[in-house]
Length: 178
Image (tube, rainbow, N blue to C red; front, side, top):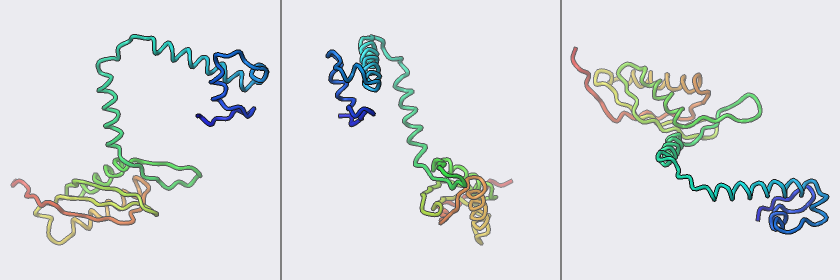
């Protein structure tokens, strides 16, 4: 049951059920029922034509569908952005993470690895996993620069406020000798 009521208070299901019957007085005079009846007849005819076709789907159809599904899954959840006007704008967590990883990568001796973004009231919480060169691992100067640049990129490039930024160093690497 569709529970879609026409302006004349007849349900579309009633019109659908009577498609093969002769239209009653109401259906003959009501513009809403007439339009619904004509649309449903056209839909039934188009559906019958499609069902009768013996076309074989293209060999790459499955691959194209799976590519779209994988792209949708990679995109991840959406993060709402603040807007000055009524309405809303959203950006994927993946896109936000890419911007923040890039900002971290601009710090000498730091390589961004994983970035997890989670929307919270008033902004986002971010966990950024890093690899730091042995030369820059001590003292925390590199991490302070990462924090500064990631916070600035979130605000300037994406329009988000970081409610929390956790930096996790999970690797220290040596740089090749010159």
